[in-house]
Image (cartoon, one colour):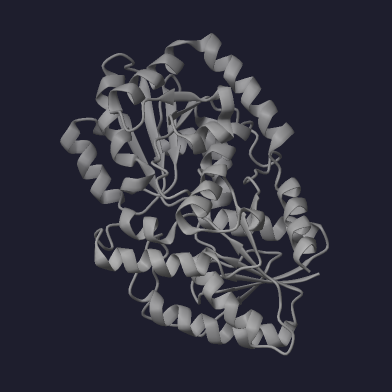
Length: 389
């Protein structure tokens, strides 16, 4: 079938939200769907995907996650371009990512002689994200956004979420009919993310001592991804485990967090790589002994990096939250929620207990191969499409 995918974001920009869009589109194409992605003017084109970009806005080049006042006119431009595109390709399904996408998708769906089914692919609460990025404070304006979000959440014919936690938020907080909601977990390409890359050249390039154990974090460097918790936990780890490197792979705010590492006195133990292309991430993960994700998933979003950690056979420390438990099950190492000392203790446990780390490594890899493939996710999305056609 013909799928018009709407992505109101600078796709592709090497971050979790975009990885979900990318991998879903690829999986749907393997299943003989024709997918066209309508997105912002900026971002990186991906070979094999049909990406249609709106009118160029030369002064806007932001790639990082988070709200911006620019999005009001950017989304208006994308709406016009997407409606035009809808008439051009005559889709069977409109698959909208993010809340702004479903608002745009509503225009594409209704401004036709024959209404097209609309699928909303949710990646978290809109208001929750705005608050998490400190774009506004809780109060009258955020309450208005909650009401607006509730309207958007109920616009689509079907909803896809990646976690049970997000489904519960939609039902309990936004009044969405549970029969509309389909929980389809994220996946991972276990052939690409296999923990078996040749890492000697990369280790030399990064100037990491071959004797050092490596703890890796990949993702956006900001408060809601938990990078502050990670840095604040490191002193307790290095007090006990000396020969260690914390490899922090991601962007933005690199200089800010380098400064924080210096202030804490851990700069000799932390290496910031800056932005790394998504297709290079498997090499970095293959370097590591264990992984950590201190993300605080307060607005229902998933924790996609856990799937790449799992496929790379990396024992993983996370905070104890239902989103993380749904993914890792009894194979995760769970720190007390938002507790830096507990986070440190869990990392020390994995670094010192080689037998436990090896056991978890094998089982995590097996679980990734057995339970989490993007092909399976694509098949489930196809089922959603067929249900509403």
